[in-house]
Structure formats: structure tokens, C-alpha cells
Image 1 (tube, rainbow, N blue to C red):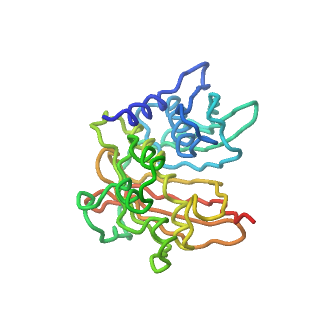
Image 2 (cartoon, rainbow, N blue to C red):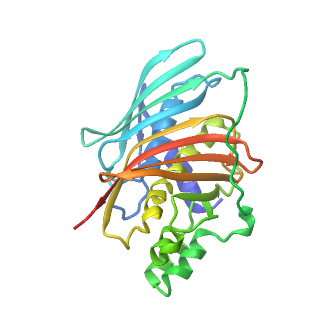
Length: 289
């Protein structure tokens, strides 16, 4: 397990400061705002700490209200909305400086038998082991830039391998523009058999590339295009058990963008083709003058 993954697991181990009140922190990095996937993952951990162990999260719906300040802790307040025979519902609010920065509703469900079908099929893409790590592709794109090489050389908690163009590649070559992105990812370590942990780690990873799918359709890239972007809301549905330490294909598309907003959605599949997670996100994409 590399140091970046150890740090992430430590960030997800929230401090309980009162019944239904938890405190989380951010990595010690020079960043302007807290990564949205981190807030969503920590909020889900807080909710899960208040739910019986026999219930698994099946959906979450979240809004990003204000940018998070990485220099101060985040307080997560959990409200117990309902504890039914089959479903449990929680509302979570993340607070900094006395103001809400994020809110989430999450629903948990006991395992049950039911009718089954899967209409969607996993896209045909190369196996992850045959694809280069995203850092290696970025090296080739950015040239001999010492600052960038330092950044790319840092360990990452998630091993991500693109089976489609990167935004920087489409920025340099308009023929590569597309409203679809396929990314394999996994956490490269043997993780505990805790279902909530694997769901939380999928939630963390789900926010990395969805907004990029909107940019890819327009040949835009962070740091290259004069734009400002931010996640507005985020919804996830967890269909089947899965492991985040095994390869998952994140198939994403952006069906629409206009009015300084864009929509992206994605499905996560196991390597055998089982659909395990669905994701939808709206983001602000604002051109700057």
C-alpha cells in the first residue's frame, strides 16, 4: 500500500466528537479547495457510522454548496431521518466556518431477493493491464517540465488507466474530441472486507473524471483553457457488491452542456461486465473573459 492510499484511508477514519457529529480533515497539500470526492466520501463514512451493520448504502444524492477550505477541519452533522424495517435514511451536512459547504442524503437497505436484469452492457475496451498509467501519458504530453514531473511522480491512491483520450490530448488534437470517456481504476492494495469502505472509495474516485468528460467534448483542458469549473451536485446508485481493490471500468458520457452548466453520467462495471454503480453529476463550466 503506497503512502497516498494510507493517507486517504486515514482521512476516511473520522473522529467522532459527539453522537452523530464527526470531524474530518484534508490532506496537507497546497490546494485552493477541498476535493469534492473527499467530502462525499467522508460524509458517507459519517452516515455509515450511524447505521446498523446489516444495511448497505444503495443511493446518495448530494449538493456542493461552497468550496471547502483545506486548512481547517470539516464537521459532519448526521440527521437520522428514518429507521424502517428495510430502509434507513440519513441526511448529512458538512460545515466549515459556521456555514454548510455540502449536503447529502443517503439511503441504506437490507439485502433482499428480487427480480434481476441488466440492460446496459460494458463497452469493449482494452484490458487495464495493457494500458499505461495516466501519469505516463501526461509525461509524454507535457514535455520536460520539472514542476509537472514532480507532481506526476507523487504516489496516488487510485491507479487510473484511460481507454480513451485525455482532455489534454483532445486540446492538442481536435479530432480526438468526444463526449465519452472510459477509465479503468482500482486501489492497488488488499483492502479489508468492509462493504462500506469499498462503496466510500468508489464515491471518492467517482468525482475525478466526470467533469473532464464535459471538457473533452469541447477540446478543453484544465490549465490550458480559460475556464472555471466546479461540481454542483452528485448522485450515485450502488446496485451490487463490488471491491474497489479490483479493476472497475468507469464508462462516462456527457449528453448535454449549455448556460455555463454541463451534465455527465457514468456507469461502473466489474471486469466481468457486471453493472455495480451508476453516477450522475452536474457541473459548472464557466468560460472566463
